[in-house]
Image (cartoon, rainbow, N blue to C red):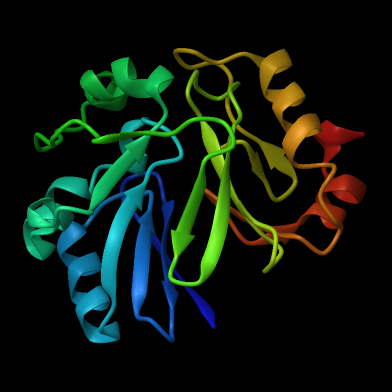
Length: 214
């Protein structure tokens, strides 16, 4: 079974997801927003082995807990472990995701070791996710779609009755709306959306009720 643990962390209430295959105990962390030590404690309690960290994009509130996460689990010492980010967000990552603009200090973290590309296939134990490049909120924003389970981790592309900001560096309203039209709306209505902020929703609910999509 694919199990999803959601934690709301950090100064702007960002959703971090621990996603694990309960049979193999293999897991990933999506957007370790803050409080890496808390993430380590929960992962250890679950008995999960973290294979990788997936970043939807490089704004500071989506990787603020990465340094403590890596330290606590000593993940950088595993040969097959990686932190993934799309290459078009690497420059944003290098300036700590704009943290200084908001007066937020961040610990130094190593550069992501894996560059996501459109169409990449990623695994969590027996479950397969596809990466889609969805710019608009940032240049290198991506989403992760598990077709077999009807799940989309949407980052800050789309929220329950909302969409991602486009007034930050690399943002574009028209590009963001094109990304939603291309990679969200064609999915089945029952597809569950786990976004970067706020509650869970579904594709069908957003198609019917999201004021930005009418």
